Image (tube, rainbow, N blue to C red; front, side):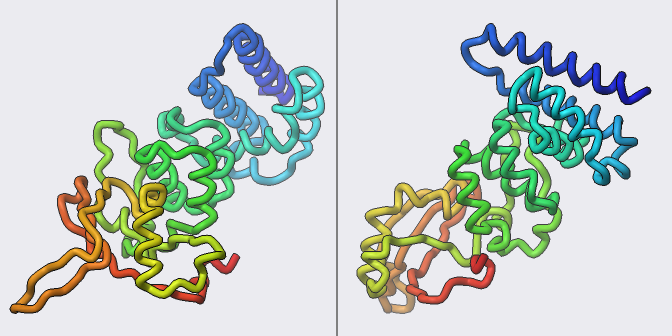
Length: 257
């Protein structure tokens, strides 16, 4: 197929989408993702396939000028490159979840490692993450803090009825809870109380399926009483999770950037 034919296909695809979009009050997220994926597919094919599509962007620059003049900045050079990367990252169309928006995917595309990208997609689906929440998870390098020994093989959740994840996919080590500068110098007892007060809005850091059972929870072992700083129950794992609260002034190396 000649390059001009590919360009005309992309132009027709975008034109059809834009016309339909203008007559809708709300944007159909699924159609937008489908359109962007198909634009990416055509761009890759026009550049000679996946092995060659990563090199040489002259064609995309040329077409971006034409398309953005016709349909606006959503089809700029940068955005067409995102669409191409969208297809290269998800060459199998049914693995694209319409539970995420195009903006979600924009933050996921720079992640080169497939397993890492899958982890964040799974978390976004399971926890109904907003774009801001997803961006914060990526910024905090949550994937890097997984204790899962085989985290290189995390698979996408395809079946919405089968959202079970093994415990290794859910527990992060360490757990990071940021505090305001005013409480940076709290001792562990004061920090413990602070965490309890802010806990509801920090459950996302723990993972999926957690419920707080108690704090300073007493247990009896061999006639001795011990206190658990924070005791959780995870309904997906059907198990208790014990958390000991510690202060630490140094930031883990994985967050230095």
